[in-house]
Length: 144
Image 1 (tube, helix red, strand yellow):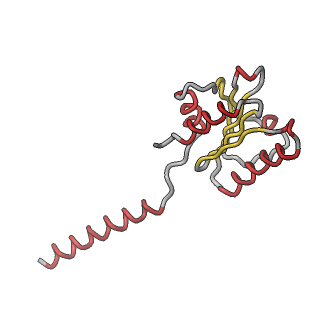
Image 2 (cartoon, one colour):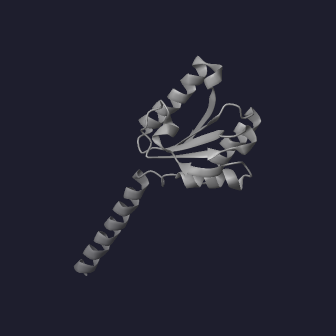
Image 3 (tube, helix red, strand yellow):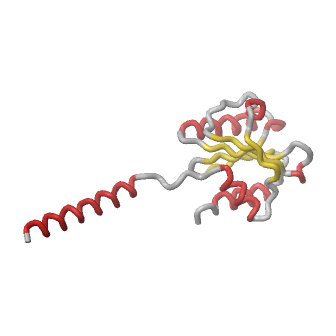
């Protein structure tokens, strides 16, 4: 009987520890594919996604784990946005601040930014605000 109680106690302890371990971990990381799919599922333009090169980053810091550039044909040739994923939240915040401050320095450099979890999205500032809000809504709908 003591062995059964000891085994049950051990089993319950393992179950509790396992459950607690999962609770402390963050949710699954979002991917650039998740974001493209959310945009497209919402009927938004997110065409020809391609992995970003150093040229796509321009003067911006290259701290993202993954970067994808996509096009919004209605904005004109070579216009669209970037989706960046990060494992370090401080790097994500730094990049968001980089894009936001560029727009504050010059209206010509303005772009829309939005973030969710480990993802930062930067979109051409020529996009109408109503349309930007649709992209933001699509991003925020991931995982709901």
